[in-house]
Each structure stands twice: as C-alpha cells, then as structure tokens.
Length: 449
Ligand SMILES: Cc1cc2nc3c(=O)[nH]c(=O)nc-3n(C[C@H](O)[C@H](O)[C@H](O)COP(=O)(O)OP(=O)(O)OC[C@H]3O[C@@H](n4cnc5c(N)ncnc54)[C@H](O)[C@@H]3O)c2cc1C
Image (cartoon, rainbow, N blue to C red):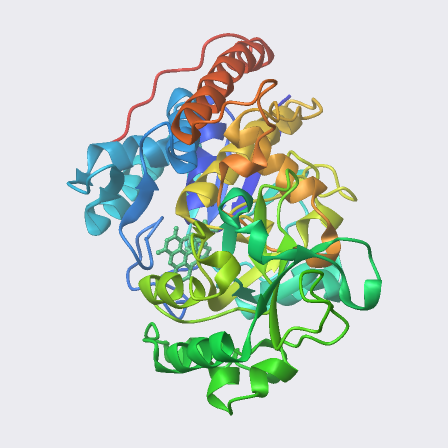
C-alpha cells in the first residue's frame, strides 16, 4: 500500500516535488492558495510564478548553479525541463520567458493523473502520513504561526538580512589579521583594519552609493537590530565605528595598536572557503556593493560569492529541525521544501522540492529516505541545511564551497571547479542507479514544455 502525499504550496518546490512523486506513481494532493488568497508579490494564479528576476543563473558546469541544474536535469526535473524549453538569450546563464514558464509548469502539473490540485489556503500543518510544506518566503500568516509552533518560535524567521559573502582566497591576508575581540574565541574572525583616511573615504562612498528599490512590503523589516549598513552610516560619520566596524578589543599585530576601524569576516560555510562580512546587510545595488566594499584594503580584490540583501523570507532554522533529506527530525513523513527549508534561490528551491519529493516517495512506500551523496550539489544542499551551525544559520545559494575539496589541490580555479563538477556527476549517476532500484526500475518518461 502506498500513501497519498499532501503538498502545501504550488511554487517552484511544491511543483517539483509533485512531479517527482507522480513519476514514481504516488498520488498527490497539491494545495495552492492563489488566486483564492494572494501574496504581496505574486501577480497571477499560475503555479511556479517567478516573482522577480527571470534568471535561473549560470548554466555552465564551472558554475555551481550550472552543476545543480545539470544534476536536476539528469533526474528528470520538471522545473529545469520547462526552463530549458522556454529559455531566452542570456549569455552563459539560463533565463526564461517568465509568463510562459509559469504557464507551462501549471499545464504540466495540472495534467498529471496522479495530482489533484486544490485551490485553497491551508492554515495548519496537515495531519497525513506523508506531507510536504513548501509555502515559500511569503507563507500565509495562519500557517506560519502553526509552523512556528511546530519548530519552536525561536526557529522560524520572517526576514532575511544577508551580508555579502566573499571567497576566502580573494582576501588579501597581508592586510588582514585573524583574532577574536578581546582574545575570546581564538582566531575565529578575519579582521580587516582601516586607517582614519581609509575609513573616511569608505564612509563617503558608502553613504553616496546607489540603493536597490525597496518595495513597501519590505520596509517593515527595517528595525534597529537589522539596519542596512548604509543606513547606519548615514546617521553620522562615526556610527559605523560604534557599530559593525568597531575596533575595540582588537590589536593589529603589524602596528601593535588598535585600528581606527575594523571590518570583521566570519567563516560562512562548512569548508572555510567562504567568509561573510559581519553586520553588513545592505540594500545597495550589486555593482555598488562590489565598488564600495572593495575599498576595504583587505578586500580590494574580493570575489563576491553572494551579495548582501534584506528581504522578506519565512524560513526555518533547518539545522535544528531537518535531516539531510529535508524531513523533520521529530516527525518522520513531514518534509519542508523551498525557501521555507532554509535554501535560497529559484533553482535551490526547486532542488529541495526534488529532494523532498524523492524522499517522500520512499516514505509513501514505507521506506526510510536516503540522503544524496555529499559530493553532489544536491547532496551538498542537504548537508548544508542539516549540518550547519544552527546559531548563525543563514539560507544559502549553492556554491562550490559547500562541496568537499578534491583529494589533490588543483590551483587553477576553472579547472578545479570542472573537476568538482565531473566528480559530482559521476557520483550522481551512480546514486541514480541506486534510486532506480529503490523505485523498482526505470521511471516512466514524462515530458513537459
Ligand atoms: C520579493 C522576492 C524576490 C525574489 N527574487 C528572487 C530572484 O530574483 N531570484 C531567485 O533566485 N530567487 C528569488 N527569490 C527567492 C526564492 O527563490 C523565490 O521566492 C522562490 O519562488 C521560492 O520558491 P518556493 O517554492 O519556496 O516558494 P514560492 O515559489 O513562493 O511558492 C510557494 C507557494 O505557496 C503558496 N502558499 C503560501 N502559503 C500558503 C498556504 N497557507 N496554503 C496554500 N498555499 C500557500 C504561495 O501562494 C506560493 O504559490 C525572491 C523572493 C522574494 C520574496
């Protein structure tokens, strides 16, 4: 006997999960609240509406987003299949005709005999044996309150204040030093000192830089604990030196003195290859972030893995709540997917839907889910959301830094990335065979788009 699966949320994650379940012959009830109830940003009643950019980012294998999409392609992903079918010219990125994309996904999901689509708001986590909650960054209030009750109030967040993240090897360590404030906590932080002159230049450029447009619904999330760095700077010349750039408790070993101002970087991923700029959540345009933050001497050649932002986002502190299969530790059979599960981005949301869908199919057959290998991009996402430090958890895009290092160091970055991708695809292909035997043979071929 195979259980029916309930999915809440017909976005990128929910549709991908429904597709993966249907491919495995599992019946699905998919609940989407639009158009009965809207969100502050969605404009149509289509499933999988892309609410902002039309880009699904890089498509080449030396880009982490390209590797993730290729893995999904090999596993018959609906979202990637439709994106490939409706792509528009965008250089090495995969960008789509947004309207056509959502319409094609809606058609594909609605025509699946296994899927029953309900247009209704769900206000509590359903009781069923196998359930996937994939209600996204704009989860309706009633359900969000129930999710908070399930995971614990401290483990559900409603906004995302993201500081920029830089590649470790692009930091100029001749102009930085490792230390914790007052020597407490070892060498956990990389400190980037500024002289008075450097600080004043930085302050002037930061306060004059161009911000991205802030939508009204996002304004409410500006409260004192989470102000954009440029807003703190605009309140006076020294406010940063008493805030995120305070130098107290730090001595620069090269001068033996306390610097005039300091920017601190904290390790951001499990592999120590990424550092986030502490307290630098920002709404500056991406080009401006690069220009202004490169004025910090140790970051003059910084490569940005991710730019800063502040936006509405409902997500759980996943390392405290979920396994690498996106399943709740305290309730087997309950999965979270999409932004809600602590990943970031269209492709990552769809990827988590794929992972939750595959695992939920196992649960529907009363089998325990198996995590993907961690040297694949899909497995690395599962590892990130389940094994990161829950005290500083922040959702992430896929990045090569989340996958294990190669056994031997390859100096050239492009070659290193290709080697990681090739290893990932070999590992994925082997794992796909294992999945196939669990699924009882090759899956039904299904095409969309
Ligand atoms: C303003 C904004 C802009 C963004 N821009 C980008 C971008 O440019 N690029 C990028 O990669 N990522 C972007 N993201 C992040 C993220 O990738 C997208 O939000 C993505 O759509 C998340 O996929 P999802 O499946 O988790 O959620 P969604 O695609 O939002 O799907 C969730 C679905 O659940 C439904 N729902 C909510 N509550 C309920 C309920 N109680 N009952 C039933 N249905 C419900 C919603 O109507 C929605 O259709 C943005 C996020 C926001 C908020």
